[in-house]
Amino acid sequence: MSFAPPSSTFDWIDDEARRRAAAGLVRALRPRSAEAELLDLASNDYLGLTRHPEVTAAAAGAAHRWGAGATGSRLVTGTTALHTEIERELADFCGFEAALVLSSGYAANLAALTALSGRGSLIVSDAGNHASIVDGCRLSRAETAVVPHVDPDAVAKALQAHDGRALAVTDSVFSVDGDAAPLAALAEVCRAANAALVVDDAHGLGVLGDGGRGALAAAGLAGGAGTVATLTLSKSLGSQGGAVLGPARVIDHLVNTARTFIFDTGLAPAAAGGALGALRLLRREPERAARAREVAAALYGRLTAAGLTAVRPDAAVVSVRAPSADAAVRWAADCRAAGVAVGCFRPPSVPDGISRLRLTARADLTEEQIGAAVATVVATAPREAGVPLN
Image 1 (cartoon, rainbow, N blue to C red):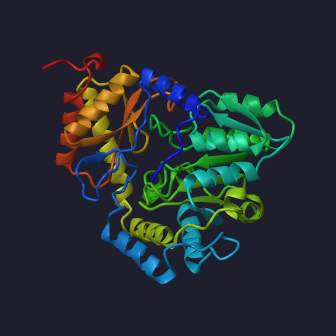
Image 2 (image 1 turned 135 degrees about the horizontal axis):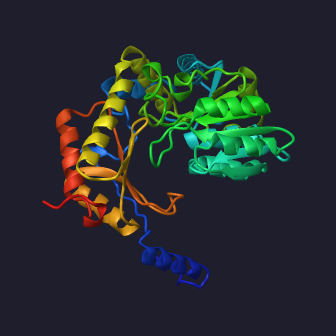
């Protein structure tokens, strides 16, 4: 096979690549094998369900029955009885009137924000919100006010300054540091301003609330007339996909107006089946949610006792500060070489410019595995991280 000689068309890409390399910000794909080669504290499999035999059997059964793909958009041929089944059970489990399943959590956030706002309206967004929320705000064509992290007073001021339709949007648990949003205070602010509250509960479902029903259930806000939740099926439920939950009239509105729902192929049956299997398992084993929180608390306690700086987790994410972006990359690589996979967050993924290791607790981790993970993170810590040298 022959290729055309290089032209100058994309020379700018080479310049960008050199700048990334100089800043230590090069990203690369790292394919993993099907076999577990590392102790995994990097994924979002909070409940340890993605390989659970019951969940994989549900996914395989759905693929055998319904096929490998949904065959079309949800409004054409892409809605199966399986899709409506998981929507009904998700809404019931989380305490909402209705639910709508989409192909990803990213698509769910874009659907909710674009369909519930628009020109002339206002979105008030926390500075620590996930990139999918940021992009939803940009695509909405609404005025967007980015307010300081977890600051209900700032949300109130932004809402008071706007005359017209408005909503506030926040992660329930922020993916970088694992801290939780003050949902009760935000809900009160939104009620006072007659604004909607949209909460991305991606990191709360399966971990927070009674039996893992989520952060909104834990705050007593599930099913509120002015409250909408988005979530993923790819974290605690171990599958893939996303959903929007809220009043039935909101869900009907999304079916008719949300472009990431209308023009996207429906969620593959295997993903829907796997998520439904995981949801039913969680109903039977609600103690998994509390165990995930226990593991996170244990990781935090042991890491800080060893001298590292970490953020106290409100759910299953444990964030450990690194002295620099380069140090964070080296630290994560050293952990991997020692047999432990951890996340590495650095600019521009972190808005405050502070690089971190990100450890995710799993309900299925044993005490021995927790100890091994902590020992590895501590032993490989950069000298600048403040851990006493042995």
